[in-house]
Every structure is written in structure tokens, then in C-alpha cells.
Image (cartoon, rainbow, N blue to C red; front, side, top):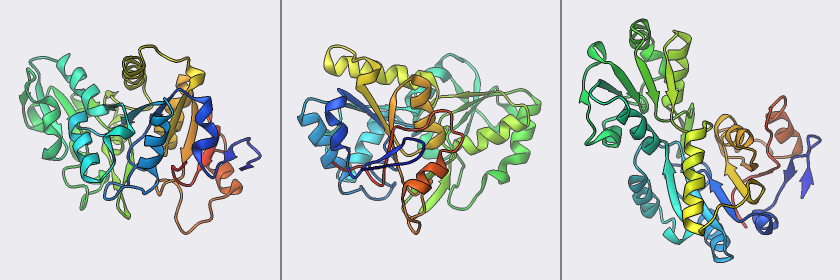
Length: 288
């Protein structure tokens, strides 16, 4: 183990911290898989922690229901005995949309995500008639960029339409690519003066659900100094953990660390210069 000048330990594995935590709040994309394939050591590491009595709640900014995320993890070969519960920003978004009962909702995002509001008292509409926007991402994130949406967002902002951002991430890994997320559209919307409600990390609502899931799994809630946050996003996972008063282990995924660059103390220190809530430790990938 080495340590940066900022006091961030570079760990070869997370096993050294296993005895210091009763529960993990772990990200999924970038920690367990890259959207296409599972990272080989991540699943076995989670299983090992749970076999030692630990509780793992997976908390993701995925704009879809937890059950759908679980099925994706199944397809990627990540074992169900590697976690206790899944909390998604999609489910948080559904709760927020439910508070706007009867409104005309414009779904900005791929059709695969519209299921998060199925059965709610809403009416899907076009952008021109919308009383509420549910943003889950770009319509075609393989070909489009956030800048393609500037005119649409400017028009909505002029009318003061509330936008619910179902995924505060700016980018996410999909195999070797980095794909823009709903957070990148919400950021543009705010520059036009549009009002935004963020459903996922680093905001409190999703953490409250995570704590409740830990409580349900264990029968009691550990103190925050016994909960370890694990994630690869600086402005979501690391920032969110810091705001919540949780220790955090940063996973150096392709989101912030180029595979061609050496992962060392200097690089980690550079990443967190001026960061209000730096992690306690960093790892190249989640492993024991």
C-alpha cells in the first residue's frame, strides 16, 4: 500500500478494509462491470464480503427499475449472492414523478427507460405540450451529443418546465466507449435557467433508500463510520459519500483514468486537487 501527499491510500485490494465496515454502498457501472462485461474480480469480492457477514447495497444512477438492473447483472454473470439489494435513481425518479400526478410528461430518453413511470397517473406528451420532463438520457446516445438538444432544452426552459434528471451522471462506460448521460442534458438545461430535480447520487434521497435497505438486511443500521462507499464517479460517488459523511474507496475506471496512463500516487493526487471530499483510498479495480 502506498499513499498520496493528500493522504489517499493506494490499495492493492479491499480486503484490508473488510474488518472496518459492516456494510458497503457500492456503485455498479464502472465498479462491477463496464456495461458490456463484468469485471472478473468484482463479483467474487462482493460474495466474499457477504460471506464474512457484510451487507452490500448496490446504488446506481441507472434510470430504470431495480428489477431490470438485477436481470442485467444476471446476464453478465454477477452472482445474486454478491449483494443484498439494489437501489436505482430510476426508482427514485418514479417516486418524484408520482408527486406530479395528472401532468403531461415528456420522456426525454431512449424508449427502454419509459417503464419507470408505467402505471402512474401521467400522460405522455411531446416536448411542446409538456408540463414535466423526465430525462433519462439521449434518444440515441451512440450517435447524438448533448449539444444536439440545445434548442429543445432552451424552449422548455423558457416555459419553466420542471425537469427530473433520472441519471445525474455526465458520462458512463459502455465497453470501450464513454456515453453521455442524462446529467449532461440537465447541466445544459440549468444554463438556460431551467429547473432541475436530480434523482440519484450525489443527492440525499437515494442514500436514504440505501440506509433503509441496509437496515432491512441487517435488522439494524450501522453507524456511518461502519459503512463504506465504493464508486468510480468523482462528482457522484465520491462527492455523494463525502456529503453523507461516509468513507469512500475510489475505483479508477475508464471514466476518469485512461488505461494507457499509469495509475499511481501522482495521478490520484492530481484527480482530487481541490476536491472538497476526497476518498480515503483508491484502487485500480475492485478486488479482494
